[in-house]
Length: 492
Image 1: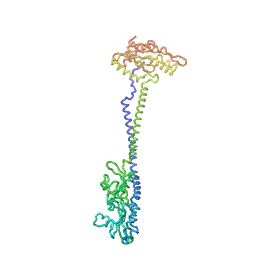
Image 2 (image 1 turned 30 degrees about the horizontal axis):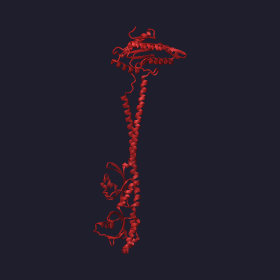
Image 3 (image 1 turned 30 degrees about the vertical axis):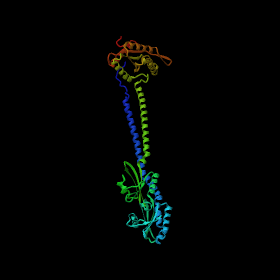
Image 4 (image 1 turned 180 degrees about the horizontal axis):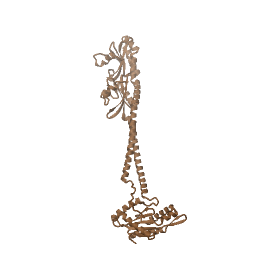
């Protein structure tokens, strides 16, 4: 007969535990995706910044320098040509005869090379000649003529100076002032051409639009002499550049990055010897990293979608796997009935309901008579088929609310809710008769079986072991009375 030892059921994860597991998995996935994506972003951004500072900006500065050579250096070459022109030197040596000849010469230079103005100032007469004739006579006492007397004594052959042009309504003009010498090397005057600042600013604007960079020029003293907008001020006054202004102006080419208004900017500085200015080319980091920032957002969106999908699929798979585990843990694989683990759970619930006064509760222990002889004669395969057949017959006989489980070996246990002892005996008798009239085919023979059943009704708040012991005693009584019969606890 059965020994009623307590068996702990296999516990499946509870819904809160499943939620914690899903949340933990989501956190791990999110952290992994974020760490990978952000690490990739920072590596890409760092590499891009190094490329910009080390390669891109210097290359763009070289390209702009080439453009400057075409657009700004050209006036210097024109002025140099004027300073070495034999006509101009011969005309001065000859005593500056026929002023119209010089006027036509300067007008030809202005028209042919597209200059804003062209000029020559004689050291001997101090007369200021330009394309429209004699402008004036320069004087050391005139503040506006200071530039000429500076040119007389300077060491370089030329200078670039920004001044109002008296000959053109004081339009702000970039002058190339070139020193002129006679054949013996004696200084005889200054010649050159000029471009309007507006024209040069237009060139800078063209560079900026073409290369998508901020461009400006700074002289050796740190003064911003040319930029897209007038009034450039001093380099040391620019946010983020004040501390490094002297360093930037101490070499021919430098590449740095600095902070301005909370944003990173990249800067390349190149000295332009023909202009004797420094060319500054800047790029905003926001434009630089816009592409990889957009890629970052896209990657984060993809990671979010992937995380949600993985969590959703994992939740479904865990749910299904858990349901399968629960079925495996609580179902007898041979008969498909509830097993002992499931019985513990279901019986505990039935006892609670009975304690709340929902009605009487009876159980029936069912044992297959002479099952060992069936196994010995026909084999275990037939024995298994007999058990499956009995399980199907019993399941078809009882109510859906009743609990039927395989108790072990050839025994079954039936829990009848809302049944008194007499009603439980009637159900047990019905089961016994149904099995007694059934048979299982085995090797051309019909295997017939019978059942012995012991029934017991639960006393008020009776412990489960005591109830099971009384049902087991009733089953032993049925067996002792000749088998194939039903006995109830307390009935002789």
